[in-house]
Structures are given as C-alpha cells and as structure tokens.
Length: 487
Image (tube, rainbow, N blue to C red; front, side, top):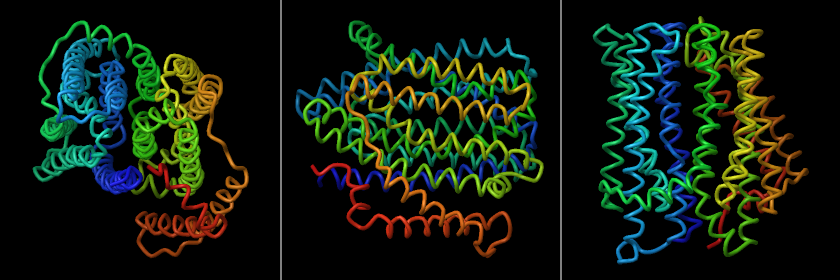
C-alpha cells in the first residue's frame, strides 16, 4: 500500500477514534459535573492538572527524540540492522521509567506546599501514581506513528476513557460517587491503557530495561531543548488552572475546567494529524525540499480550513455545549468557552509551525516561542485573573497562543527558509463557506430537545460548510487538500 493510502487510512482511524473518545469524554464530564457539582469538579480539575504537569516534566523530550530516531533509521526491523531501533526503544523506555518515578515522588511531596485541603493533597498523590502509567504510554506513540498503526494508540485511549466511565458508573450504581472513587477510577484506567499498549509494542520491539549510560548522556543532550520546550509549553497551556486554584477558588476552577475540557479534546486532532507528518517532513526536508514544501503547504491548507469554521461554530454553540456536558449551575462556563474557541483556532495552525521546527531539527530556536509564551501566560494570568476570574484566564490563553503562533512563524521563516503559503482567495472562500454555515446553525430546526439539538446544529452546519466550500473551491482544489504525499 502506498504511503498516501496508508496515511489516509491512519487519518480516518484518528478521526473515527477521536470521535469515539469525544463521546466517552463528554459522557465522563457530564456525569462528573452533574453529580460532583462546581466546587468538587474544580478539585478534580486541579488534581488532574497537577499530575498532567508532573507527566510533562517526566517527558524529558524523549517522545520526539524516539520518533525522529526511528524515522532516520528506516531499516527493516527483522534484520540485524534493526537492532539499533530495538536498543533505542528499550533505553528510552528505561529513561522514562526512572524519570517518571522520580517526578512522582517529588511531586507528591511538593503538593503539600499548596493551599489545598488535606483530601485534595492525598488524592493528588494517588493520581500521581496513575500518572506513571500515563507517561510510559506516551513514550511509545512515536513507534506506532512510524509504523502507521495509530489505531493502537486510539484503542488504548478508548480503553482508558471506558475504564474511567465504568468506574464512575459503578460508583453511581452503589450510590457512592465521591471524588475519591473518581481518582481511583482514573488510576485503574491508566493501568489498563498501559497494559494494552505495552502488549502491542512488543510486537515490534522486545522492550526490556536497558541502561547504556553513554547512550543516555547523548540522548539527554539531544532531548534537553525538547524538554525545555515541553516544560515551558506546559506552563502556558496548564498553569492557568493551577493559578486559578491558588488565586481564586475551586468553583472558578470548576467553571473554567468544564470549558477547558472542550479545548483539550479539540486540540488533539491537529496534534495527532501533524504528529503523523513529522517522519515525512524530516525525510523530505533532508532529501526532497520541493516535496517538503508541498507537504507543509497542503497541511497548512487543511488546518486553517478547519480552524476557521471550528472557532465560529464553537462560539455560536457555546451555551448548548456547556449544557450538554454539565448542568445549569455551570452556565457561566459558556463565556470562557466562547473565548477559548478562539484559542482553539490558533492552536490548530501553530501546531504545524512548531512541528516544522522540530522535524527540521530547529528545536533549539523554537525554545524562544515557548519561553516567551510561558512568561506571557503567567503575566497575563496575574493581571487578568484578579479582574475577570476564569474569563480572565481564558483571555490570557488566547493572547498567549496568538503570541506563540507569531513567533513560530518568524522562526520558521528565518531558520527553515520555507514557510507554508497562504492563499488569500482560499481564505475568503473558507470564510464565505463559514458564513453560510453560521446561518445554517442559527436557523437549524429544533429536532431534539435542548441541549441535545446541538448535534443537529453541528451536523447541519458542518454539512453546509463542506458543500459550500466544495462549490466555491472546485473538485480539483479540494482534492489537493487531502493528498499529502504521492509516494
């Protein structure tokens, strides 16, 4: 099967899988917001945010390094030369295991410095144990991407969400849905996902514990820029919820967390899409510059063609979306969600520029964007949270993401010497199709009871957008949006 067909198949698997993950995640959030309430859901959000940040510290930049190293050694794994990749996978897995255990212990001690209740601190320590398995799963993503078997990643993700949903369902059945059982369910779900992923990774590599210190030193030296980037990215992507928990209240975190959950779900789509392109961009940048430019142009077209309607549609549907995933007491979340949908559109595009720099080995200068983004986000949150609470945190996120995108674009132009080209005519066509989509959303018939009718509005609006873009653009041009590589 050609690369184009395999890439398309993987893209379709991602879309289908993410749709399933979306439904399960929405079900989880709906149950948690409905039965925990605003303040306890805020505590749940604070705990998960804390352990996610710990997980990012344990990353060490190894995920990208492993994916890139495998891509640069496109050997057959069933011949002796393939042992290089087996060696790399085992050593990087061991490095991650050591790192994540150390981070878990340090993070469990550091949580006692925060002004949280004793229960929240103890449950954070328990969730940190689950984070160990979450982090170990992530290190294998590059392997599945290289072999174009992202269906394994998706199935693992689905198992994790189903595990949490099952735990919540059992707690409800026994009339004991409290925060403690939710965190226990989270830990079990992470163990379940790790078991599935580790079983499947051994079909490609016989992963063992290996400690080649010379390799560790070289790898850590290469990974250091990525570690700094990931750490700084975590600051500007997650720190707002922790700052809210300290500067405001757990209720404010609950409002913001409900809205932010939608952003987290949506931004995984461009992240996984562009992640699939990293090996291809690396290869073409080194050996086929014209093909490299063609790939980034087509990827850019796809991403901004999606970013514009997603942002506009999300703003129009913010209120029913909030009611879909929560209860009436979460209605203030809609204002944060409207603002965050603007950040979603920016993230769709900035993902590509960030991965262009990584795939061309210009991760060192890209640290500038992460550095400025992290400090800008902290500064804007310090300024805006006291004035506007969780809405201020949402505004700070939009400003920060815009700043990071601008810096990424400048760095790509300066270091890579190539940047995706934007067609103003195509942008106008997308905007015009989005205008028709907006009218379709606003005047969609109410077929289902509120807020479930949001699905009807989304389907009708999305269909109108696709049809109008097809009419405005033409079959030939539409086709080029989706053909990434001809090989």
